[in-house]
Image (cartoon, rainbow, N blue to C red; front, top):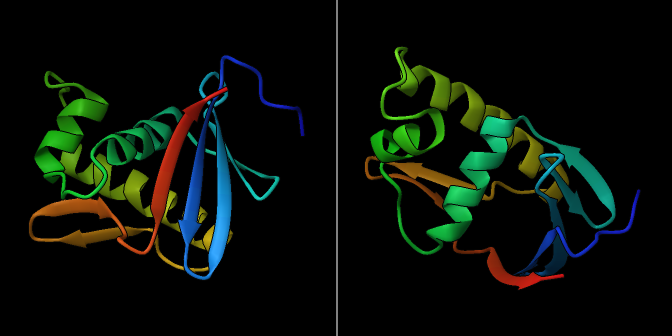
Length: 121
């Protein structure tokens, strides 16, 4: 694993009872959880960053789909979002040991059990 540099952003997660730090490598679409790299696709990474940016609120699936795939995307963004969200959930769940993303009729949100601190390196 390479050491993060100042072009990276770090997101520390303090979730009871775990304290985990994510090192987000923007150019590689990877997260580092407790020193373990989690490679994401560009779209999974975009979903993650949108959820981090809107921490504490539910993000409507339609809005998230437009933000990630583009408002003029000529496909079924709901289907694409569901597929990429499932892969992101699985990656985060495997690393954290619990589901970090909540879904309900309002959309998607990060679990309240996960607290984020964002800092630039």
